[in-house]
Image (cartoon, rainbow, N blue to C red; front, side, top):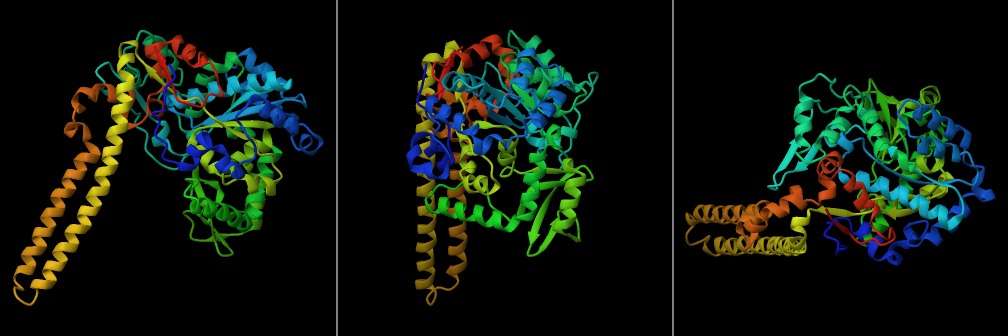
Length: 524
């Protein structure tokens, strides 16, 4: 049953992209809203201007080599070979290498890419294959090392392995071996659904493997039979486009930073910030002693994070030629590298991703890289059949609650300013008559502000206990908005699989129209 979106969109640019595209179209390269528009874009990708810019033999060879190291289904292997066709294009998506598949939105991205590739192929007549960029070069272990599920009572189950935080690439971090007792707790965190045994087997398949390899194997298991190609960036570091784009970032660093800054300022002026800051860091990282380090531009000096000495552009370029795998892109350079390696007609992303891509149109042009359409991923909440009648009420209640919290915050700020102003005036008027009262007034002001602050803390962090109907809604809100976030951002893929099994994949497949960008509700 389709629903008005209960999704929280904290990024105005991403929200406008979906709800009012003409307002923001100038910041993007192409319209995404119909299959025929994407078909026309696919045709442009293979014209004389762009066709020769893709090194298909290097791309196919890298994909083959990576696929040979993993249990890659025949459909995915066939799609790798189809990419050798000069007419072929791609739909690309990606996500960090989360434990147990990461949050549900990762699966929704992958499924959207698979379906959109089929739509583009049907509309254009050109081969179109889905590619998943397994972002295992990321170093945020806290983000990927987690499992989340919600039990029948609405209680959130959490798990993480005892792996210290740091700056290592998660591609280099191994999960515990199969005999480690922590796996039992990990399996328990998936919940007690009817498909829990199968989910446990899929989770335990990652034992002793890196986060990147475990994630690849799971995605290939779930969507490889549908033709999804999965690749880690480390398999592409010898690709000519990888080296060229990193070299451009080093050589043209200030010119590129200024270009990004100008676009960022335009968006800020329009009240639609991109959500990713433009800084003096180069849009790449250098791996030093296994850790991912920023490279910062300080005037004419280049400084590697953690080093007291500066380096030079020449030295970095020499190191890039000798060790391309020591360099990895940041969030603003990664899309250009993806689009230079793959003939990408569309990138599937969430609203936050789509927002920061709004910075990159000029950078694609300056780098001679084709910028694809940005396609909003499928958004969905899985609702147990027993809760179906209550779900719309839960969404409406939460919207009212959010509005009241916002309203209370405005009132609190006004009241706080009023108290300070009134007591300040009182102190000034009494200063010459009763100076000893000044200290008492200050204490009184502090007590009032502290009491008001305590109330606002409850409004912000415990609103249900002071809201009419709140306690009755608690379990449902916990179930479908765990940690006060949409289910798809919190619940782990394998936790959902433990509960729903094959019906999870069927629910995604049964969304009738991929070009209906509303939030969807699947009654399970």
